[in-house]
Image (tube, rainbow, N blue to C red; front, side, top):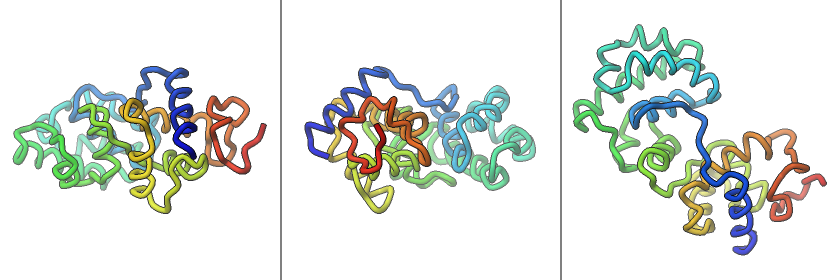
Length: 210
């Protein structure tokens, strides 16, 4: 995709949704981190249902430790892979308390040291909690990067690096959220809704429909 196309692509997404918001519910940086960890291989809707009660009971790392793994597990048992996720949440809570003074670290290096936190999760936290212009490549962004011609790549990290290179600086802050929402509701995996796509003209997908 040519630079002018990329510029128009994001200008249209911005016009449609000037201040995009992610769909995970949270109350502070720590609960955002927990929600993103829990969202792996799960829907935001399912995670939100589980965390509404959880975050009333524990919204800081110390409160999570005080809650204990049994009660935590009970809150999140409706989420896929909940046993492993519960262990990671407890472990990352302890690490944040013991090594970071109870505060979520704000660097990629320190975030990915936390149990259950990979590059994608760290990028989401850096972007949403700390306003960093990062790109978290999930299945939606990986699909869009390749399908539209915006940022072709064989791996999520390759797509991430390409997106960071081609997206104009003024759109980087919200690009991650715009693309997730577009992939979730319009440019769907099995049946993209090209007829209602605001970036139809810029998209280079060979099989797009009128």
